[in-house]
Length: 426
Image 1 (spheres, rainbow, N blue to C red):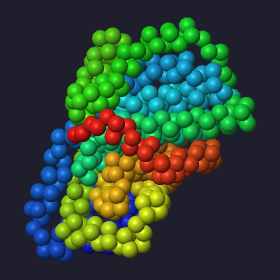
Image 2 (spheres, rainbow, N blue to C red; image 1 turned 60 degrees about the vertical axis):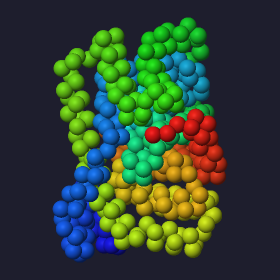
Image 3 (cartoon, rainbow, N blue to C red; image 1 turned 30 degrees about the vertical axis):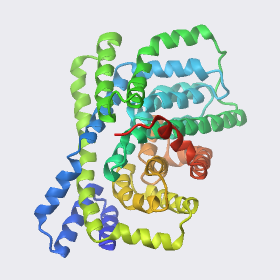
Image 4 (cartoon, rainbow, N blue to C red; image 1 turned 45 degrees about the vertical axis):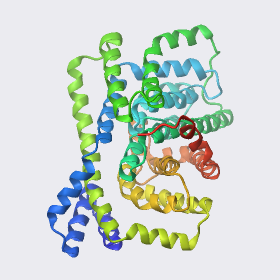
């Protein structure tokens, strides 16, 4: 069954068929070969999407839309400029810090690339950055948005593996900050070599002005993270609270978009949500087929025969996921691979919360690599640069991400200590 599934999946990719439809075709073929009624496929697909935590996805997507159009993102970028604009690299450092703020609210790498890139790239080119360099910094920093909570990939991982989404969110805070720090160090070095990115003198009065303008926006991540840690609400309820708050400050306080613009945001949110749910529905069927055919159990026993060393196993799995990221987008890769790989790593004592964060990060790197890296294509469009030029400019940042990946594999406590300290659940 596993080989039939993989054969149909890769044939679908080769033919250019959307992955969701490829999964659907594979599910029908596997049902016919197994002499299983097709009505069971409908039951399993409904079971896959009939989940309360899934409601967090459209709400967080809509929060990102409101941020981009309601003045929240711009105020956060201004605050980032006042905080780190004096560091060598100038607006490059601002772009990375802004992505940490933005990712801490939207949970989407693609939204981060589009929103921060449109604001930052023109200004960065005026400061001595080439267009590919400016685009590279804005594009690579978007991976922070899928690690720092809220994170749509972590929501998906929690659903398909039945892992606590709240713990996954808390576990993503420190690794997300580590990634941001690594990218800032790389930008500092590259700016020193290339003499790009003008710095500006740190002024407390400007920082205070930027903080006063953005403090209402800063309450958003406090609502999400603080509410979860404090046990006030679940991740899904946090998404609803974040949406209501972002709508209030955008419509009533900042007044930078009209209520009629909300309809377009709802349409875009519905399209993205529909894509995710269709993938999840068909992936649930595939996971069910593989489970009743003992595929996960067989994989666990075979991998245990090769190695039971957690570090070596994580290196092997990370290498596999990097290869998957080259040919598959993050969302389908997550819903397909997480149910198969999680039993393998947990069989050697690896915390599923830790693995969820690690998997999101590795597949996030795939968003930045050709030939199917979604963020690469968005970055090329926003920065008006060729794919070849952008990839060349990103080479130092690829190296940085791989170094951070090795650190996270070697020291899993970086990921797990905070959720263990807060002891959240749900």
